Image (cartoon, rainbow, N blue to C red; front, side):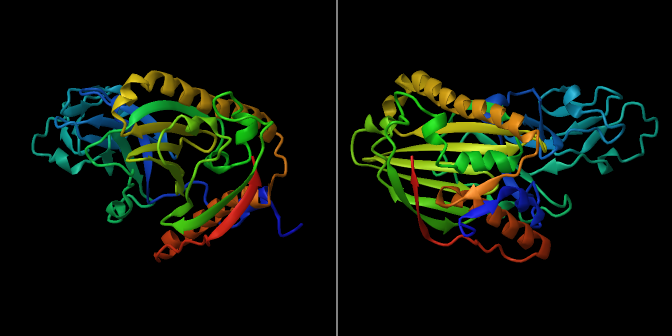
Length: 359
């Protein structure tokens, strides 16, 4: 029994940070950024202001004026410069100060004053931000820019955004947990708790995570049955908290991505984005989006129940092969932390393995 069971409450004691840094995080779908508008978000407990420049390229700055700390997002943005609401200091999109209205000494070089600028990218119509451990060392940012699996000219559609009332660890474990699907996501178009089947899936390590090797979709998942042509799917989880599902249907492909971004120690934002190469997908988009939102809100509902349970700080456990992916996640986190602390290459601790569970 001891080989099958791992007490979850012991995991945080094993030199594991709650937040991982020196990684890219999903910030928002690009449709949330409008010219001349600012968007403020909290990510990993850091307040960040986002905007787009004249060329529609995104930027992200620390959301504080360096003068007295007022959020820059509370000020004005004309599409070129942000002006603080308190004393009118101005900053361009790189975070460099361009004007201090109250300063009579015109010899002072205000460009020496800077707001920290985070590396920020638009990838396939989605906005990603790099959160460093040390804001003076950004040289590693370009090494692990996310690959979203579709051509650079294509864009993802936005499905849904919800705030999970849980930390990033609980949220990730819920995302990659195969055993909850039967009970949380019961529906006529997906699967029923009355039709449980033994599943056997082969896993392999890849980059900063692991993948469920490409396979034919489960026969008791009705959602796949409407797809015509030879169908296969591969599910890939990557740190810090992204799940990629790539489905091939004949010559076409579907990419469904769920991204978990820590807001703070108690909340995690879940974003879901979707792409399909079918030309007719636009005609079915709204019913598909509705079904996707329903699926996500089923998860949100169980997490609201989970929040109540965790208030009493119960002892938790990870048990057997259905929880193997959760254990891998914690091992991956520890190895990433060690590699960053020791400035050594990351070594993926996951080994190839075939897992079994009933859903």
